[in-house]
Length: 456
Ligand code: AMP
Image 1: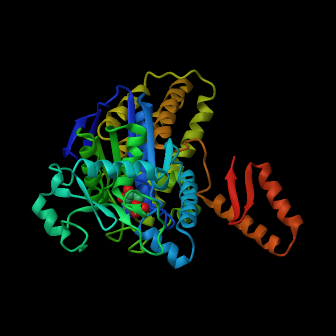
Image 2: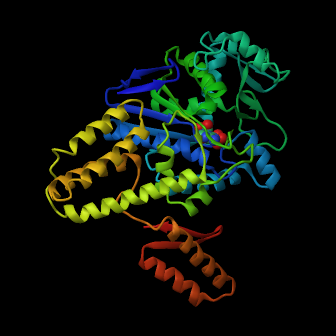
């Protein structure tokens, strides 16, 4: 199996550090706003990668951090007049709901940065002791020129880095390119006690503290979108390798291309976002996943509703076909003689740096072939077995045909009606809607934030 490693800019053989175990970490969101479909693109890509590694028989420990303290969080919490903790709680909940809605189920553990303050402080202390970091007015900085390997991931030379960093003036730093490991407390900001006084952690050290806790000094696979290569991942390498003296900190670095809207990266700061929440109301998660995965994870996606509609039509057609073939296969014992070549092709393309685009093309070819053997239930059953395996790795429910996401809109209409009934204290109607939905295993819970829906 080959994966493209940003560190070497090459497709390399995938050989985990500890035999069959894959320790995998992907940078999670900064929880100050609703996640958008740019996030969805990245997290669906890594979800498919984790699913495929498991399909191949690896024991995957998939860890994701949640950045619940940083400048943007503080600014947003202040604008809204709420505590940073409260803001983090709201948007962490929203993120979890959105991941569930998208079928991103492969993460084993989500780790909040603020739960690892002791580990962060230990790393910062160790870096000072080893001469890589210095304290200045209650803040601690990593002295970049002390780490010889700085720039190896982003392929930048030290003088380019220095030139690039000059814009960021901070009189506490010895050199403009140094980055903060610990930030001295400022009025109105959350703080923790530390050997350097009250303060809060810098961004890069949050992730290294979390991964050292679970994986130790070195691990297999680190992911994120391409914007994180520099400075974030470069700085993580500097921190980790300076502490451990071992390299590589991470064996394989994987980076997703951006999801763009009209040529610009979709991002909260640019304000050109389509939230996962609104998109999963309008489209099935399956459609969104199929759409994202039909582009290789390293290539950019230029988002378009027309393409999404087209994907929806193609996927619905495939699902109908799958149901129809299931009628033919009934309980026939699968004959794998023909289908097996599609499984082999699937493994071949996914082994080539997780080529989900080709995997989907292969799935379409499988159905074409299966349709030619409708007179043979055992062969059809074999094709369906392989189709089910592929769909499972892609995270698509092949055998549920839904009416283009409309049922979600219908559910929303019912929820709105129930909301109105409750406002009018018409408890009979409100209970009736809740009970009837419960009969079809849609559970409504009334929470402080309003009605929450759970599909059982
Ligand atoms: P953030 O919440 O901005 O820290 O982003 C969380 C993750 O989503 C990071 O890996 C980002 O690089 C990734 N991400 C953010 N915007 C996009 C986008 N438009 N396309 C793909 N990935 C993105």
